[in-house]
Image 1 (cartoon, rainbow, N blue to C red):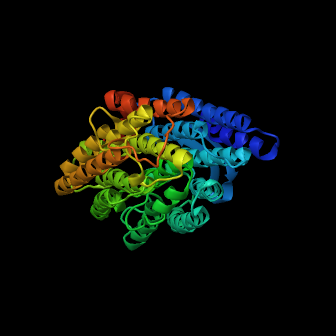
Image 2: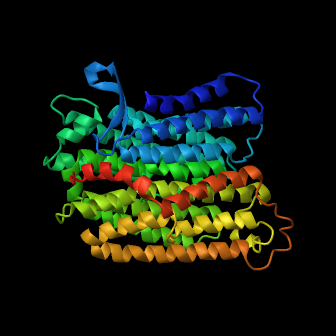
Image 3: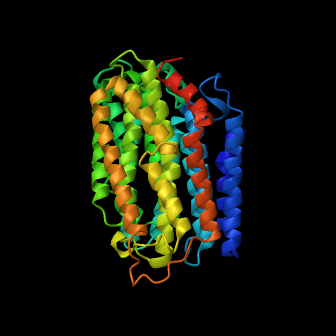
Length: 495
């Protein structure tokens, strides 16, 4: 029942905020933080109770729902799901605590955040394919309202574009799910059955079309180039905490879905198309980094680095799917690295978007050229931004390095030329973050900027927790790798 508790306690908190009036800003935030915190605590207990030597899925709850269709309430988690779900819960707690202008509607704002947390955790924890789709779609609703009602600039346009674009991807995903369902002799939406039976192994064109539908739907969510155009504007116009959730959690629904659906359920078909997927990932790595380097808007620059980093994740997944060489150790390493990249990117880019929210709260401006010299006025803000930037560019001793090293080591063993070209993305990423730090914090302070307030206690407390996670994973990743390795070994056939 522990995963059921983690899944539904945020929705109970959201329901309380939605139906009961009279909440002050502080009261609404505390209720939301308590709900999100209890969900996080449940996931921590599930992590501690997970047996790496046990079966792939553990902590299973199952209740029959629509037996005639093979639909049931099924939740359970492997090490990959637990790692990503726990990171997501941490980020939701951080987003709830972080200061934001709720425009006189704190009850509604925090209710939508909790609704979004429940839906996102549902994607990671469900073992029913139909429920996976339901939760996947519900996340669109929560983020649509967070951007449209509490964003700035052309927020409503950005929210509508986000919803329509990603909803189109969801419909493609639904077609792929129906194709998987109909491929079974005894149709069921039980993910465990689909993983065990591999019903589309060696079925040619039909399997290829199902794989294409799944991958297109998930690639839009990730997003992969050229299906990324909804992302930058959604980030720029969303409030800082919503941007942190969008990048840190919702993008992971795409990459996690690639692991849970095509990689786990269509291993033979994915192996056939692994190289084209890996090439698309390389394009995302290089394109995301190069375009980010050219951005003069702080949030837009960070948004394009997310495209770059999701490229690393997809590259690791594609390498794990490849059967070009009989090297399960390298494939397992790449899949573990892809999962660590999801966790690291969530913490790192989540922190960067929260920091960008602090800039907006103080000046209402994201233009890099309008800043400079802030290291003298805001040393704490400078320190946290430097740490997150260095982690994002893959500095050893920080979380980003652990993930990227594993992804590129595994890739080099399977597709060495892709690994060599992909490393160029790291060089460009280093350049864009160093340039960002120089323009924000060093040089002369612009005369029109005036006094720039230092981080408040709530801001530096939240950023301190995220930074601690970044450093701990970078220095002592064993606790995370032990959880992930067992599941990645089973998925690539190394155990």
